[in-house]
Image (cartoon, rainbow, N blue to C red):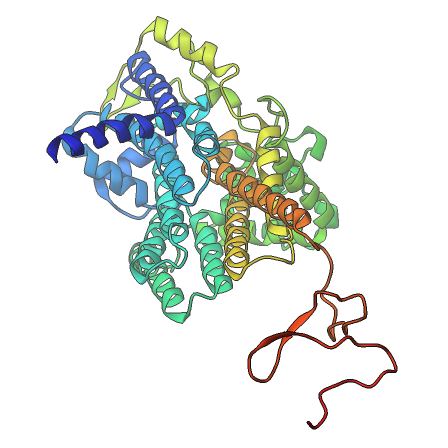
Amino acid sequence: MAMNRLRSTSLIRPARLRRHRLIIVLIVLASALRVLAMAAYRPAFEFAGDSYAYLQLARYLSPDTVRPAGYPVALHALSVTGELWVVPAVQHALGLGLGLAVYALLTHRGVAPTIAALAAAPVLLDAYQVNIEHFVMAETLFDALLVAGLVALLWDREPPLWACGLAGGALALAALVRTVGVVLGILALAYLIARRFGWSRSVAFAGTLAAPLLGYAFWFHSVHGSYALSGGDAYWLYGRVAPIADCARLDLTPAARQLCSAHPPSERPGPNYYVWNRNSPRFTVALPDAAKKAAMTDFAHQVIEHQPADYTRMVTGEVAHYFAPGRWVGRRDWPVGTWGFPAYPVPLYWNINAPLATFDGELVARAVSPTPAAVLRVYQRHGYTPGPALGAMVALGVAAVFRKAPRRSSRAEHDERRRIRADCALLVAAGTALLVVPSATVCFDYRYMLPTLVLFPPAAAFGWQQITRVRAARRQSAEEPGAGEAPSWPPELPTADNKDFYDHDVNNRICPMQTFRPGAPTGGGAA
């Protein structure tokens, strides 16, 4: 018996390896890219501004007015090692985990291993994804929490209560890493309600989603005096609309009018100038902080209200930019070179040329190994997910939402297709929100596109599964005898041509039915 068990195991394992050979190859390649990054740029990448702020907040653990404290808490936990290289190492491991989680979800749901591996490939092999994992930045942790929440929701046909609670908690933590996670939590709650899982699951999800956010809002109030997750919304939105503001068309208060630019819109810089540059009206206007914040909020709302066409054109243009071929930026966009593997010296405006800060706040020099760095730079020229490919993924997901099943479908088939439609709608809506919200409130930055690499590809995989199943069902239905013919009612009466027509008599004996002739009397009268 032991020999039989050993023989059966030896036969199963190679078959499993062959079934999953593509994802194994992708994981090996993805690991090699991340090892190259760790060897090429030591100990990490830092973005002057955000990375410095995150490391400082990790030491004091206080809610910031601009950045929520989720990522600083994670950095605080890693700081016990005293080694900065641990941060990108952990984030690279999370990047590999993202690809494996996408693959596991799709194969568990019946997607072919090849299609599932292709859906995991963008997050595993995209050079810009590998690059952002090497930064002391919040994006990788945000992606991990987002995927954890979605996998918990989508794994089972009807997620158990604990899975709904886990999903709500994961998305709440994602919102405390990047506040756009609040929007994703609302979309996930709408998904649960639309699937009609019952009030208990929706309550479990909503409770674990709301509890961390409310707790953080109270903590923020204890420090800054207002209930919020961050206090920088007014600054961001002012910077977003300042380049297009036509103050002659606005009904501004005297305080808000001081925020107008003296230059025509065609000559103005991008949003980041108005948020961060010391020559921006944000810093030159002499107003108390509270009054300035109120003035910026009023200014931004006035622009959106009185220039809706300009604002909509700007937002939709930047969302469409993410789906354009290549990697290019306009003069108002954030430089794409920031998220490339650099050759030194780095241009100042990329914000990645300053010395590195450690957990203790000390500044250290970076080390660069030329050969692996050159390999990564060559790979990054073509090793990224093209914008049109993302657009095709969205189209597949949307097509699955509106794909109609054939009439002759079983109840189980109908329920499964309804489930896939809802899943695709959630994934596409979440990915779209991650592009629309930054475009509407911050600026265009390819960094904001990277989380869609764990949303659009699974939506495309589910969409492909839905479309192929519906097509196969329709083909099968067309090949069946009498397919496409609606049953007549009432049933057709027998005629003289029905030579083989039989029926049961009252004694359950099989006998030929009497031939029926129109106009002739029928049998069956009293004996």
